[in-house]
Length: 454
Figure 1 (tube, rainbow, N blue to C red):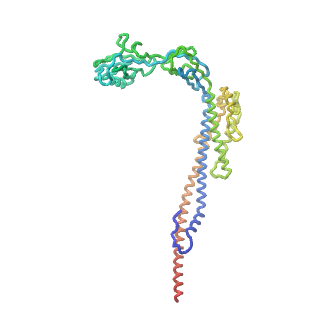
Figure 2: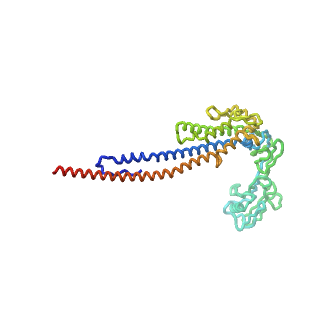
């Protein structure tokens, strides 16, 4: 509010104390405005917290609002080291026998000739190597490693090239198909010339390598399974069409072993979603209760008495305690173990819910509802849009309070300027008064000395 007044100190009057007292008194309207602004900003922040809590609740409700979201299934395998399984929401409960007769394999073809090293010996000087219709052309001398690099640098070759050591001072070029399955097998036509030479097996002597089983280190093959005694083939070991909504991954071939796959409703997944909703609701309920308690204590920054908060609480309680015409076994949340307590929170009775979860269709009718008759959570999701949409009640209330606080800033700034001018004026007046009093005191002393000398 300004610097202290520099005074003579000879008059025995503390003008700084007087100035401070006057300015404190005259600053009370400013302080009231600042307190009002702080309260508005605090309320706006509280509405922001409320919007976050309601948004979290709506997200949790949305995860329980559709039949698809509730159609959780789990798949288990009696031997996960041989066959692993996973289920999606489109799976159907059931038991399936799976036998893996053959795994899908990628073709591997190695050169029949060897080189004593990978970086020194020239294996070819010119010519072409055609792999599955993709031609690699040599324009100069190449070692085994350089040839492998040239193959891999070619656009979209059907096989990857590598160099492996097959014995002491013995290296081979190995071509491995990029994908498993018979349709991804490849042939090799070799017209490379010069150098120490490079050749591949050609069991049928037709000038083409890889087209006979004997030419290959690994013959390309499809996965072959029996699922409930129905033959299934696949170019990969991941099969997602044999069992509806279930993905099978085959790891081990064993035509003599039957792996049991069970697909069941995943009650635990639905329970997790219900628990998440209860947690979100209780977080919101606690925040609302705290706001009401602070409002009762006269806290001007509380939104405990705001009608929007009351509306949120009232509509939520009504939705959670209502009866729903589902056409199924359950018509209220309490029947499946989700209950409102006397403290205004939600709780879950595990035993009741476990029993209810066995009736998946009835639970879905209660939670999600049907066309024209939304269930508990479908209705909640829709109802909460009134509060959370960009033009909803909560963003609107927060913006209104923020705008009010912003408008007060101009009044506060103007009042601060007026108080600064007022203080400066008083400072000048007090300094002038101090100077005048000092002069009078000096004159009084001179007159006293003059009188004493007469």
